[in-house]
Image (cartoon, rainbow, N blue to C red):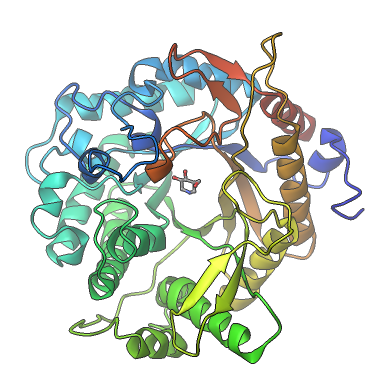
Length: 454
Ligand code: IFM
């Protein structure tokens, strides 16, 4: 069956996965928790950035978001009702260490205790992500991720959280999308902390790789058995046209972004083409790169959303645009819907790096959902998006990719970073006025898929 012919039969789709496949959801702290000043939480760089005039499309912050800090029991009950087997959430560093290091905030830690206990009581396996971009502002004031001292700070934080939750949590993730944090936050300036300086972005990336290794060691010394990974966002990169210039630009961009992280994580050091590309663009000016240690990964997390077409404006590296190809099917983000890209990215990761396991740690789509007068959200486009991507994942599995889990992004409509509340990625609709939750049709469909899988 090709993706085009695929129907939405959850039973047929589920049958293509093993019974113990890890179906679940992913969320992140700043996007859903709210309670920004409650119970001793410190400020994070997103609290600061969200207040910069013009930084966020609707001028909103994550101060309240989905109010998950108070409603987590109901949210976990919803997730359990859908049938989730795993739940990937992140810890807010500034909730547990308001100054980034030093004094711990017991009330913050107690929240994650309660959360983990509730997740486990619902029969769901927790997967704890340590960093989803919300760095404590106190650390940013001391240089943030561009300063090498962040490596010890991250290890201290990892040790604290692993020491506290590790008696109940085996599945860990150090970073979510380190490239997005480094590049969008420090070179493009559209994410916190809003800097626009490539050498800083490359220092940040280097320190993330070091901090990952330090955190893995900290977790392993406190948690047994521990299953540790990192979630890398890798979309399918293609040349916009079949010209030498676009082909070269696409290869340079992949090397300067994706391989920039993946090669070191798999023990190969920085990629030569990436070094040449960043070097020629002047990004390495004054940067002393380290020799990052291998990632020691039990699994590689893949966040996949789209196909990116690279179009060169000139022969100069980084003088290119990265967009959806005109005329293609796109989500509300303007992202090209490309399920075959998921199959191919999974295959490429398997062949190039041979990770022990791959977990799809995020996959999902934003659409302008509306609630019908009968109270239903008929998000058929999202259902089709999921069905086609899950079918593509099944193809990769059948071709030998060691794929063990799939996390839908996201449980709830939430704070979509610089787009504020203008994009809905949830399988559960959130009315941000009342905080009412409503299962969308996609949630019911995903639930039948999980149920059919046993
Ligand atoms: O909302 C984000 C998430 O925080 C990281 N991955 C992509 C999602 C959709 O943009």
